[in-house]
Length: 576
Image (cartoon, rainbow, N blue to C red; front, top):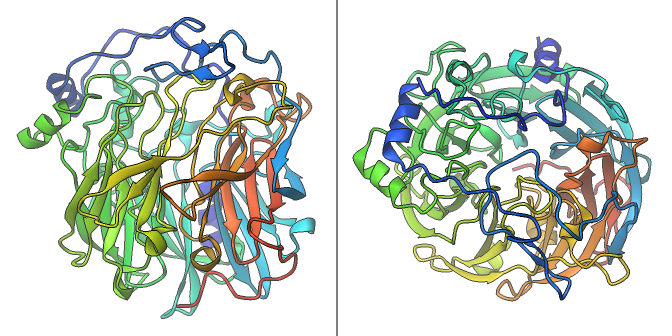
């Protein structure tokens, strides 16, 4: 059952065409009762498209002036001063390339994980439509041991993919060691697909109905791993995040499902991002229906997960006057662009069962939150931070707690969703949370700038998306010990940026690796703009994995120390 189940999870890949989303909009046609409530509760004030070279563009001093606000689009215009080609040069500071492995990911996204089996280390790169597993015991000579889903080349993907026809595939994955089972256990999130299903929820009532009655699980599955590849995994539990209807069949489950990857160390409590029902619909994002909150689950028996509690913040639910009032008070209400709610799990620096009490979460346009989880059945909101609106793109998506125990600071950021810098710049905020009931913005990370010999003065000129994505997430080997004082982010067209955060109130750029863009012999033109969209760091072996649109780079840096190019000295996931 395991091999068949995973094979069904993964399917083929691809976006049908480069210009989906660029068609003329149809008439407004809203039939869904929750969307009607959203329209009734909000003004209608979408941003007007700014004019390139007038409302934004290059300044005389060579810097770039971002637009104030933009709509979400898959067809961002170019601006005067932008390169007319995809830059074929690479740039590096305090970083060296160990190896490059082409055609590992898709050009859109990758989640990454590491797990050790039998003295070997395996790297997992996956999204909903593909899975690659590489033996990276020697990162100079990595070998693909499992490949499923489309492989990308100059003509696109090797497999066609219809997002609306996929019935069973997973998104983010978390792997943890479970002491009771004496096995690695994999938790796979299942959520509504975010690409290729719908363009504008105000104009596509049939597609809205399809998402309300989605043809795949809204929740998560749990697998025991007897080996590194899916043919050795056994499905032991399936749960819906629609906790009020735990037995609802597929098609009748409400809410969003579990977004991205869960936060779980293999012990009692697991945290995840989810909208539990359809009332969590107060969000401006044009092709997404939900405003996810957070859930706590009891994983004492991984084969029998039990729902513990739901965390909701003001401004998420429709049909509740207090919540709707809070939503309308948000300056983003009515812009028909902003993501509202969480996208990733609530994060702590240690498991709740091991004394973890304070959790931090990014809630998109609703802001950054801190929570008291000392009683997991009754979580309490502690503090809240908001910043000026920055749309299109996401806001307060990624949260990094790696430096919190050392400094009391956490980091939070959104990331760009439009290409060609057709949106406000997305800052990484350094947040002083030493008093978690009163967090405050202490600093902004510096904006990366190209080296003087690059041939352009701002990364916006390099084409594609520019801004921070994420810093690797939970589960990077050795991060607690080996990651102190450094924060490593994927930065799209600016590659990998390594920040010195020894003093988190004064972050600085200490190193970077910016890969060349793919050639036409590697990828079609429409698939190039995301450049470097993910990073995963083995702090124990001092190796950085950078995920680019045309492959994966293994990197080393003296900022981390001399890399271990052999088998790891300590097994991962760690045995707790």
